[in-house]
Length: 296
Image (cartoon, rainbow, N blue to C red):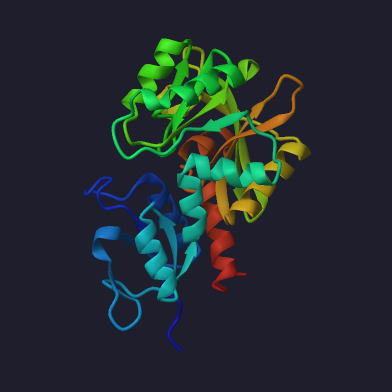
């Protein structure tokens, strides 16, 4: 009987010379467990929609899907490949508005959020009613986020009406939302790396010179022991979004209540591993290989 074949799929345009760090870590963890997983850029795979759906390039039974190429992910699933994470989960997490809509419908605690109207062309004065509602609802300062963005990019702290309207116009056709600023959490958040509904590792991230705490933007990190309430909230996010694993970013509200800031379906693991000493790639690899019946 032919053994199961697993792959690590990543975006070949990210760095054509080498896979990204998480893929290297996962490949190494799999090898240490006696399982070879081939690293495959999305550029080497083609969805063939002829008689049904097939994938040309590399045969596989399951894969870590470390990319946001949703069309390819859906094609792989249609061809019978099991993905970690699944296409639906990656797609909803890639869109901050869709993420917050899903979580708000379940009444999970989060900052007050307003989603800007969709536009097909350059934003003009038609965005004025939205700006007025944002001012009335949130006040200043407030936070603007493009719905698609990573590493704290495309996130802005807005102090007044002129700045709000300028930034809204500059978004052009890119979707965005605005949120209340949780002033007691400026420059600080808490990342819980969830695997299979459990917290594998957690860290506090902080910055002394930026309202964002992302390590990629110069923030620092330290190991953190989350409360049961924080773990339950992060697990609920993963369950509602259909995630096998995720980096769930939490804020602390004025009363200490945890609030969902963002949920990342392809969270990097170098920072949290360095802060905590926990081999997150190993925990994640164990979870997937056990589900596939390749290790006990």
